[in-house]
Length: 333
Image 1: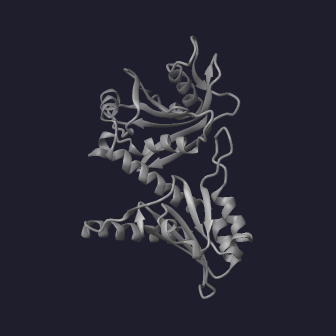
Image 2: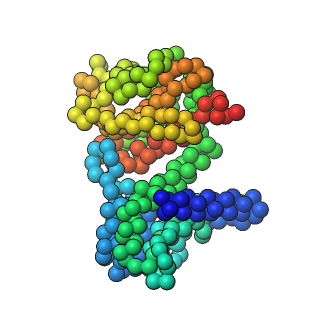
Image 3: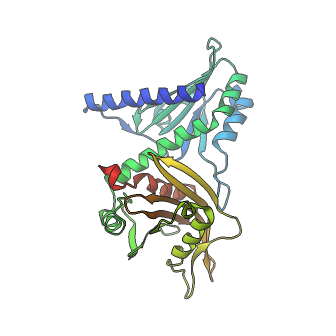
C-alpha cells in the first residue's frame, strides 16, 4: 500500500509540474516522441535483464492480453542498456528504467512526463539489490502496468477530444443525450430511436461500436445474464455479410463480467467474443453499461473489433478508449 501511494503521489507531483511548465513556458516546444502505441523501452543492465529481475519484468510486461483470439503481449518490450539510451531511443513515448543502488533503503518508483519529448512517460524503478526489485515488481505489477496503460489512454483521449467526428457526437447527443468523442474515420451506419451503430473500416480490419438504451428496471438490469440478453438483442441489428446473418455473442467462451467506477459513475463491463449467426466471422468485444439517472434508462456502449489477419491488441485498445470520452450532462456542467 505504501508503494502504491508513493507511485500515485509521485505521478501527481510530476503531472502538476508538467502542467505548470506548460502554462508558464508556452514557447518551450518539445520534440515529438518516438515509438508505436504500447511499445516500451526498458533500460536495464545486462546482469539484471538475464537474471530474475528480467524474468519478472517480462512476466509482467509481456503477459498476454485477455480475451483476444491469439496471444498478444500487454507491451512490445525493447530492452537497451544505459549506454544505448541516447538519441531517438531516449525520445521514446514509454520508458521504464531499472537501476541498482546499494545505498537505497528500499525500492521506489519515480514518474516523469515529457522529459525529452512529448507525449512521454518515464518510470524509474530503483532498489538496493535484485531480490528487492523482484519482490517490488511482483507486488506492484498492476500499478506499473496501469501507469503505462493510462499514459497511452490519455494520449488517445486527448487526440479524440481535439479531432473528433462532430456528426456522430451530434447524433449520439440527439438520440441519447450523451456526448462522445469518436475519432474521424468512423461513419454512422445506423441510427434509430434506441440504437446507434458506427464503424471504421480499414483494408484488412474493422473497428465499430453500437450504443443502445432501454428502461432501467432495478439492479437486476445490471446482472450479467440481463446484460448478455440485451447485448444479443441489440447486436442482432448489425447485419452480417450474407443474407439472414447478424452479430451475436459467442457461446464458446462465456464473457467476463466486472463492475467498476469511473469518475464516480458505476459501470458494468462485459468482455468476450462475438460471432455472426449463420456465417463465419468473429472477434473480441468489450461492452460498458451504466444507468443514466436523469432518464432512468440503461445506457450501453458496446465496442467490437474484426481483424482476421492483423494483431488485435491496438484495435481493441482503440475502442476501449471511447469510454473515456463519454460525457453525461451532469459531468459536462
